[in-house]
Image 1 (tube, rainbow, N blue to C red):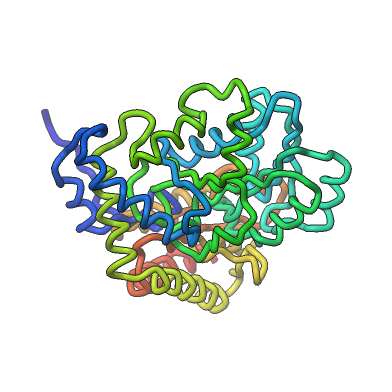
Image 2 (cartoon, rainbow, N blue to C red):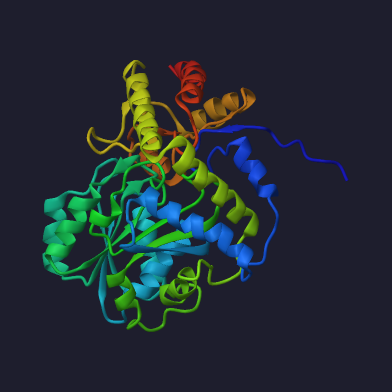
Length: 380
């Protein structure tokens, strides 16, 4: 059997993300039984370091669900929206829409409040909608991967709680890349994943569950099995997972979280992400016809979206720029597909994305932006 020619690409997309060589090698650590004492040697420090990275102490219980961030998000909907309750899903992009779709597909009484692509949540509009709808639960995206917009999590949660609703937050593409201060966030449950700013392969959805959420979940029915956070919490408190975990990923996660907390340092990691955001902002400002898509003050520290000049097409970005950079050894992100399709149909300028999360370094980003600039200038 002939071996395929897999390209050794440096990923500058928004997930899966670049994985360090030492993290790859951690996959070769010994396999173990997930109900054996060896399991505790992995998952006890994993859960402790997850807390440190989230800034939550003992205020939230971390759970690991087999799957991706969507798995944890669906578990939050299944476990925390009771039959007959209304859930308001607030969307500033494709992944806010996903939260709505998860709720609707699970038979919840859901409504989607959509804001224009590239914009953050308008607090006045949100408050008016909450007053009108009187939802029991409100979901929103902390960091919208499709648009590069970061919402003010604390302010949004505060507004939701002002009207007696429970906030559920999607933080899939920012956890591990920014200071969440989760203990003071107001979120009832915060959902995230391994394959983004943690710099790990996909495989676990992560939930940070508050005591408030646990108490409500105990009363909600029709949660299923794998989406029942009460079942996950029972195992999590034993430093276990509900069902058989990806033990290879668990070894990598143990290694990576220990390295982040005890070698790189949590604050240094967050500062590096902010530095790289500034690098993209300065780079875009120096390119004729290009500019940042997300408004200042709401730009993500993990993924930047850049508006292209008028007239640039999806085909040019995919077949021209992306494939040229593939030849240079990079996987370029020509923009979220559904977003650019909608923008192109509306006659609006398209966007590209630059993923600078996880273990991407400023030196790596500098090199990539130089290559990307050469190809983008060919579009004019």
